Image (cartoon, rainbow, N blue to C red; front, side):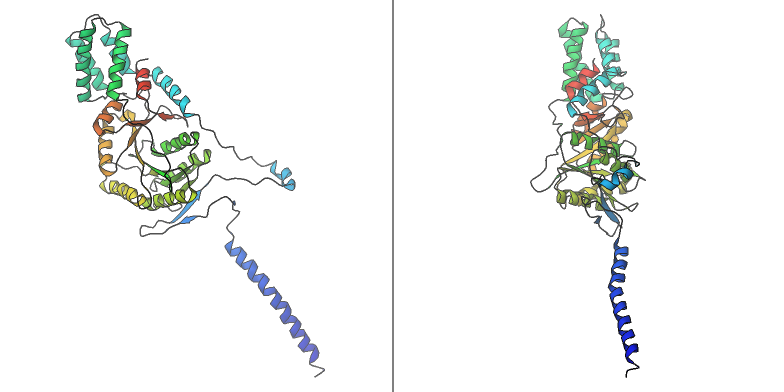
Length: 396
């Protein structure tokens, strides 16, 4: 027995050592499996959803924040590039003045042409035909052209004198009437009691929807709105990253899928859900470019809207149109209005290459107001549309 005692003690000691190491090993193994890299405490957990369409993983992309450096990190941090500061969007009020000045300086055929024609000493039928042609070339539309020409004929006849000052005042009044300043051009972006306002942005390929969403986010941030973006354009390469970049520049998070070709309706649903949970003021949904002759894609757009409405109302549907497309924009607008209830128009590229009359034609065709206009490629070159400012710029 005495001979076996050292052997028994060795076995007991060995088992004790092994038993103590097992928990340490398991803990280390679990930690290595669960580690996903450094995570900011303010970042929300990833949003996940898989559905029949292969929604994939949805993540809320927030601008990165950094904890204050410790003393020992100061020397090392001095050698690293600093994180760029958030941009401060320009105030909305100042944009209207700047856009008006830019439009006034552009090569505006509509205002200049009408002023020149109606200031002539003699206005005969040939002049009225030129007036009519000028209006039609400016994309005002046939009905609006006939209406305006008839009104101008009567006023010129009654007026008798045609000094530039009188003609400009007359044109200003009639053009403002035609554009209809009484139309409600405010954006429906007021938060509801228990959920955010939801805004969808739609339009065909190439008109700049994603850029418009990014610029509009800057407008809302400038008005102290808490905004969240939803990247439901899952078919265009890098669309989600482009939108997230726009948002990050002004501190706005973006919900997007990390799977190419994910279900757009799923992304939109999760974006609205995240907006409700985060109690933001406005959720903006960027949608894929829809060719108006692609019936299936238009149906998909209707589906996105229906899915959103399962948990919130869609308060605003903005149709983005390129002002340089002229009458083609009307065709696009009609098709979209049949699929979703368009509540407003965003008119981009309304500069010297565009025909200002398209504002009149769109509103008369759809009964929907132009709410926002863009006159450049700068991040703050988007502003609320104002009928009087627009006409004053045309006639400047």
